[in-house]
Length: 540
Image (cartoon, rainbow, N blue to C red):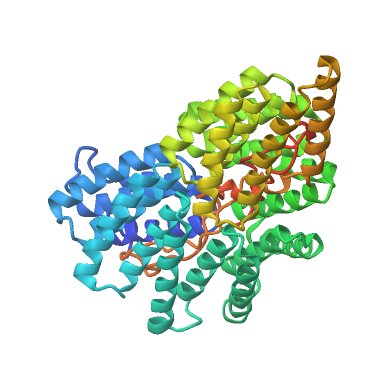
């Protein structure tokens, strides 16, 4: 029997086909199909539940493509109508609130996402129970909000609970259990707990290879994360070997232009850069950037991530003028597209400020870094590692300007925050203390030389300071400055399709990792090191 385009079976088939295209990374084609489906409904009719469902699918696809503002507006329109038609506790309403939380993350509105996540969890816990899969999916999403705000312990506690519940209800080899293991390993890694992360990732990978197969996208995601953990430990050969294999398999399974393949190229480029193969890294990153511009457009978040990372590779390659120009373009583009207060925008601003400092444009650099500190305190909070990072560099630059009292007070605050967030024995805490002790010794040396001839005094102080600073220098921190692709296995709450909770990774639903790993605060500001915001790439 031939059915018309408005027949429910025709519409459902079109929606299912769109989902297949999404899995293949063919977002534009999927979007076109959903829009065609929506043409079968009245434009003004927001009282049709089926139309609202199709709109929800469209909002989700827009979100995957990085059009977070459009997605957010659409979700809010849908939720408003569903609350009137179905009620605030209806499953379809909660599904779209859950998806809206993800969109808010993409916009950097972490506190709003957290509030919405808690609302969804409260309702789902009351309606379904604490261990229901839908409740657990919402808890996993809330954990992500905590991680974005630097609340690692709170996130870890939630993720451990989710993992234990999935293991108990669905077994050790269920995809949702494996997704929870994957995400918890990422939380370990971001806290610098490399061995714990590596052990959990290796365990997850072994199960995924056995249960899902070596070529499954989720398996490749965990392989990529394990490579990232190797990189953070300086095990470059092992990292590169895994990344080459992930890239080969993604090309084979998903195609040259699939989002996961592009991310794999970025990952490998990061490792090339870290091992001094800057020409190879730049070639891969340019290839990724050009492909993303063609497929997604210059203003897509993923394209801007690639711009940001290419700028760092050019800086590593000593092509400073090109690097600074590209970073400035990235910062300006992010300001226009994402807004001045988006965390990614501030990250590029921070990097640009440091490079201006390298160029000797101290006044401009200090003004930019002061603004970074203000924005990060407002957006992320004073205890976020990115905020502490900016505060640290600002303290050092104030000292260079002779603003000694302000510099010392700021660095004392950095030590206090580092101790609270990381602990007294953490490298960042110890490094900040070293700078304070260095400055204190400079003051003592200056006072002790007071009886000498003025010229001798100034010459002695200058030499002593230079010697002290060189003793404090360590390896460049750039290896942890790249923007990272997401390492989260997204668990979507959805009841209208057969894959009710989708754990597959979305290549362009990206967020970058907190930049605390990149900080090597013992290095000299004159050493040409770059700073925050260039976390190593990673599929997720």
